Image 1 (cartoon, rainbow, N blue to C red):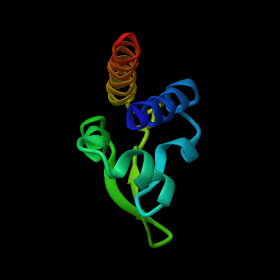
Image 2 (cartoon, rainbow, N blue to C red):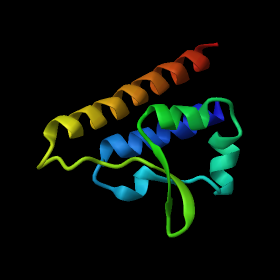
Image 3 (tube, rainbow, N blue to C red):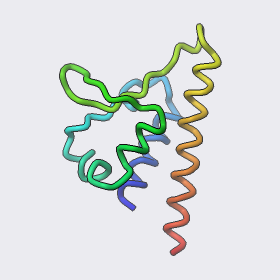
Image 4 (tube, one colour):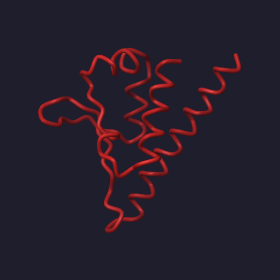
Length: 101
């Protein structure tokens, strides 16, 4: 449940403010990431399936979601945002399913 809650928070932040780069960069070596997401089966894979890529920022390994330029490629931006939104909806559905149990 911790991983689903943490992932839901990440995707809620990105979807509510997609222009905020800070929400789209997740440090892979951060202890909180490991505790909440990284140590659980499927956590890292979900990020990759949702369009994040492995990369580095200032030599720090990260998961990065790169926002396409909405002014030059609206279709790519729409696809990117739709994937993030669909992932959030899946997480929210999964989270409410677990609370019912």
